[in-house]
Length: 480
Image (cartoon, helix red, strand yellow):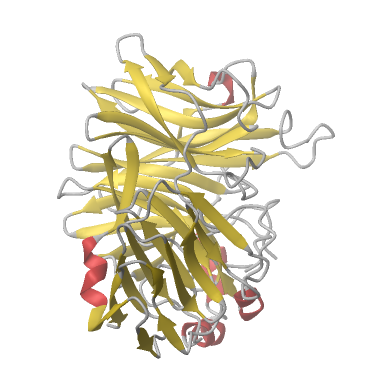
């Protein structure tokens, strides 16, 4: 009934949704539903979009296919709100592919506050399926960067093209998407993920004085090929540095790095704002934002407290891992919101403090001691400076361990296609494992490293802190 060859209007969705109450209730009651992460009411969820704070309320949109948990249908924007990053209200779809500008999908984008109004930018995908030369990459498709302005985050405004196919450089393919806005000294910069016609990833940069008229300025790229497409760019200033986060597709694995089908990395950027020109600083392998199995397409924003908060999609495109909830009608989720900072040249991330309000009973143990019946809802913080090795069974058959300079998340036989992910460390001095019903988020050394992965394993019967050296753990059971 719903596919990318046909538009979807609000009335189409509402007519369909009226018959889904029984399915939605069954899903809501499932024991694998998450306690403090956002996930879809029905169907499929991916990229976070349009993150913005209005008053005391955070508005979070995300890519949404409510019609098919395996994601074969059209893409909408769904709208969530929260005041505390723990409880989320589902406001329902807010943006539909219902026009000539986005008839094949309302793809990813962002929000930008200016003079009391919210400016939304997103990619309207138009696939010309009826053309003989339609090939998805070079011909037969339009990627329109659409602008909407509103004061009401439930009604996103009229759609207008901000940047369209005629505005892209001649060497750029039809892969151009995911606009994100940065303001610096009164000038607005739009970054767009892009793919050249010879399959090199880059980020296009456009400038504007009024958020309405945009002009191509430059691009950000590496001197050598690093993937064929750089999706979901996010350019922001943090602790006196300019940072670019993006998702290069098609990067081959390199040892323990880049093991997922597609990557999420970050770069330090040297900016000449007058030119303008943006160059990637330093050499070497671009660091991964998250080294787990399920992390992609993050987006960040600044909140009223001045925190730079990042939320990612707990999933990965083209992944071979499976999620058993698909047969039950939904899959995927968003990560816990993470506060970013730069420390010793590293992009560090830590769960927003609001999550700690879920902490209830506390159990303190030292190396060799055990927490009985830990359950699947917990926040465990391990202090282990100087420890040569450590092992923690966080779920039945799922282990986090550190030995010989490598930290490893080992899913054993419980990964549904996920096996191991590792990170090389100079040392391990602290470890935090944040566990929701079917989600693990591991933070290492005060957030210098993160690993996010879905897990559908049972709770471990007991959790013993095994360590060679001194180690202690503060274990908190979580509940509302």
